[in-house]
Image (tube, rainbow, N blue to C red; front, side, top):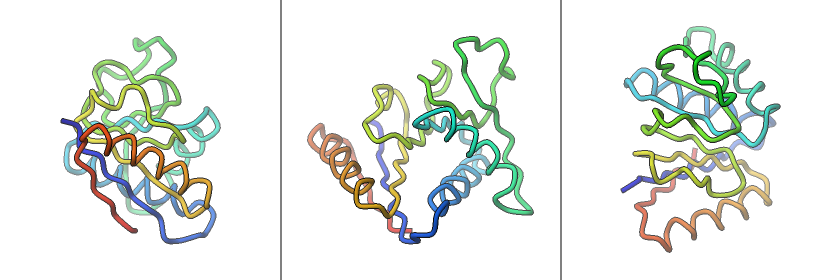
Length: 145
């Protein structure tokens, strides 16, 4: 069964949640996990694409954006993929969800990491997602970071 972790940001600074996502993805990469970052839209995908190259001077997280329903343009098996569409079928290890709603594909992943910013609307939406998972019996963990 899919494990669901909620990471609740404590730092209200703009962009701090994105940096937390990058740190999480970097750690997952170092531990050999494949990660799909499911964003809300193309703009958020582009922002995280840029940030993964620059969030820490000593880090290196190779990644790609996509898919565009044309998986042939991707490397044979990128470790980190960023997109706002359904992930390719080959990705089923870690899903980083940055969406306001529960992603329809979540249950095929071993683990889902839900990141929650400090805004009241973000917290309200996260509570709805938390209840959705809880009511269906998924194992849940909460982390304040």
